[in-house]
Length: 351
Image (cartoon, rainbow, N blue to C red; front, side, top):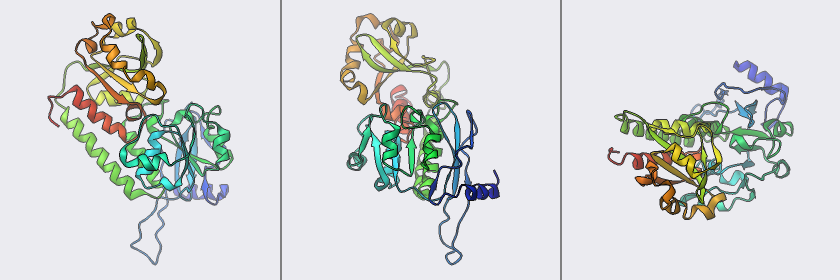
C-alpha cells in the first residue's frame, strides 16, 4: 500500500485517537507478514527530534487466521493484555501505567517485574475472559495471543474494531501459518512502534538477535539424526497431554536445537502406551498454573513408573521442566528457554 493510500484511508475513517482501521477491510487467512507503513514526522523547528513511527498500519488476526488492517494514529493510553508474555513486554518497555487489566498468569513472573505485574487488575483466567468484561473497561487497544481473539472469548478483532478498539495480535502466536523465533523480535519492534517506545524495543531486538546467533553458532557442529523431543504437559497416573508440531513457534525452536517434536498434533489424552511408542530421547515437561497440583511431583512420579522404563528419556533421565510462559507464551522469555534447553541437551558444547 503506498503512503498516499494510507493517508486517504485515515481521512476516510476519521478516527481522532486510536483507530482500528476500517471495519470492512479484512482478508481471510492472510499470510502476508505484518505490513508496516510509517509516516515520519519531524518538527521543522527541531531537526534533531527523533522521528516517530505513527501513524502505523499493520494486520491483526483472529484465531481462525482472518486478518484485519489496523491503523494506529496516536499511542494508546489504555491497554488490556490477554496473556503473560504481552504483559511482561509492556512492563519491560516502561508501559505499566497504561495496562488497565490483564488475565491470570501462567507462571510466576521474574523478580524485576513481579511487583508491577501484581499491581495490574486481573479480569479473568485467559480461558474465561469475556468480550463484555473487555468492552466494559473501555481500552484503546487489546494486545496478546491470537487464540483469544474469538467471539466466544474476548471478542474477534472485528468485534473490537466495530466499537473503536484496536488490536495487536502477536505474530509469534499465530497457528494458521509457520512462525519463527524472529517473529518474537518483530512483535517487540511493532509494539515499540505502536507505543512510541522504538528505542527500547530496538535495544531488546538487538539483544535477542545476538542471543539467537550465539546459540546457532554454538550448535552449528551438530549433525546426524535430530533428537526426538516430547513436549509434555499435565502428567498424572500415567496419562498426559502434549504440544505438537502444529505449535509452529515451538517447532522452529526445536529445529534450531537440532531436535524434532515426536507429536504431529497436540493432544490431552495420551497414555503410557503412547509414550512407549513415541520413545522420545528427551521429555520437556511444561509447568503451568492450570496443572499446578499435578506438576509438583509429576517428573518424580514419571521417572519411577516401572511401565515406562524402556523409554529412552526415562531410562537416561533426560527430563527437564520449563514454564509454560517461557516455552509457549511467544514472548522474549522464549529466548531464555532456548538457552536452557541448549544447555540441557548439549552440556558438552561450549557456550
